[in-house]
Amino acid sequence: MKTLLTLLTASALATIAAAQGSPTIALSVKPERDLLLAGPRDAIIQIELLAKDSDQKRTIPINLAVVLDRSGSMAGAKLEKAKQAAGVALDQLGRSDIFSVIIYDDEVEVLIPPQKVEDKEDLKRQINRIKDGGSTALYAGVEKGAAQLRKYFDSENVNRMILLSDGIANVGPSSPSQLAKLGKELRQEGMGVSTIGLGDDYNEDLMTALAEASHGNYYYVKDAEKLPGIFTEELGTVKSVVARNVKVIITLPKGVKPRGILGEEDIAFNGQTVTIPLSEFYGSQTRRFLLSCEAPDISDAEIALAQVEVSYEDSANGEAVRENKTATAKQNSDVRLVEASVKADVAANTAITRNRLAKEQAVKLADAGKSKDAADVLLRQAAANAALPAAAKSQLLKEEDSELRGKAEELKSAGSLSKTSRKEFQYQNYQDKNQKR
Image (tube, rainbow, N blue to C red):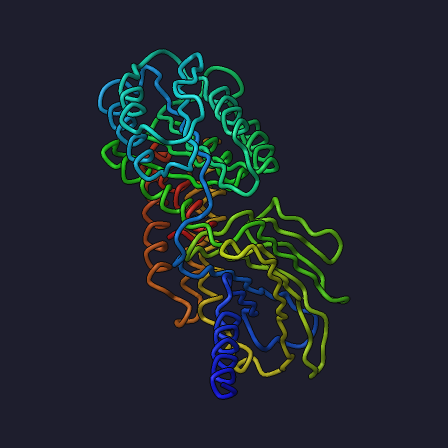
């Protein structure tokens, strides 16, 4: 008996150790260089969170509101595929999930009030009766969708809205800042909005702003035929929640000056600390942040550059998890050793982020009619990439370089970016920022 108990105890301890060795979210913190030159120096620290694969059967109910544009521009194949896509979303829900459909043109209508998914065929028949209408009251559609989510809202569930539009919001509030404000308010309530822009005539700035502010996803769909697949992808993501209430806290030691989070203007330090709320995390999801700071003169001693803490609630067992890691560096006067200490993946990710910032600046300049200046921004960034260490030149970076030069040529020859090019830039920027490429 004693031997059996010993074996059982050993087995239990091994199981606990294995679980501890494989956290739901793995935290990685590392500087771009292990060595810094003498004197105060700028440093980049990569903070990366990687969620494990979702191998658990889904237990968290989904409260889903589908908000469909039925304005006149959606007539024909677009609306038919949108209805099919809504049916695809419905097929992925279970009897404990909540489903509602809101349709909008110049007015907003609750087609299917929020209810448990019991008779899918009847719900599909209601969806298939949608007809195209007039203008585009997008803001009101989102507000109405949020109102339906609130009726069955539960902070322990996934509360998500999927918004589809193919046109410019022309009824009610319609600026990206107004939609971003609404998205932030919904996020604070515990709701996320994933946006799908269809074709080349919608406002990509607005759709991106709403998705990012609410911690949802954004999709650019040029071909309506792909809509059902996008809905499948979105629901597959939502169904694989592995962590809730994810939060990152970065603290810099005294003497280390914060510059900010590269490419994240909305994330601001309060003194030496910044907190980044991330809401839910899905299976295999990655989030990466590049901390920019100035390290003091540290002689030959090792110095802590930043302490990073991640905290979250494990969806599998409801337990609160907390992990801390610290980034350190040493000073060295040998330039060759300093350059050799560069971590290729951090350097490449930093370059890709700088590409994104260059593309964002180029879009603003092009919008202002300054196409030559926009082209120059892209070409300067391509030149900066060319000067990177060979190890940092990933395949993705090479592809981006080619695109930077191609879009610069388009700006010079055409004097502007086409609707398609602008949306491609915006979508790539969103994907790069959220590590989806």
